[in-house]
Length: 120
Image (cartoon, rainbow, N blue to C red; front, side, top):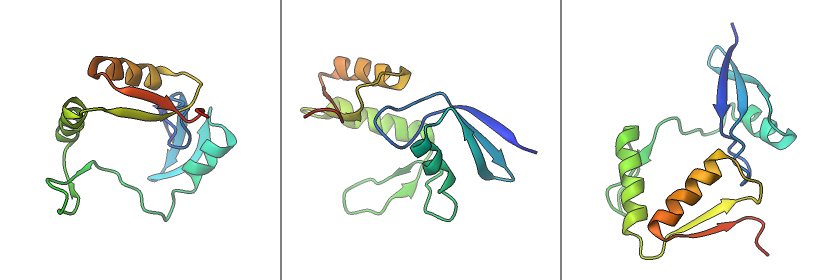
């Protein structure tokens, strides 16, 4: 039976399209909806490659990454952003979506520089 996972954010370009639907059967991605050709190919070629399915964290620069829970990963990400002297949010394209709007709102609160992939 094919399961449909809705509102998936595409991992490819800076557009962060967040309306992708992924078809999953027996734990494997078998198709997509609402993805561009490149986004679709990105999802379909994950089979057999390294794919992180859980958040990873390291306690200091010398440690290897270790698995952690999502709450801890989110808290650590927030701490790093808030404590940054000059945070940079980069990688967005010029096309907006909900994920980009939220990132920009966070950037405004922490005084970040926000840049996109369309900068010349």
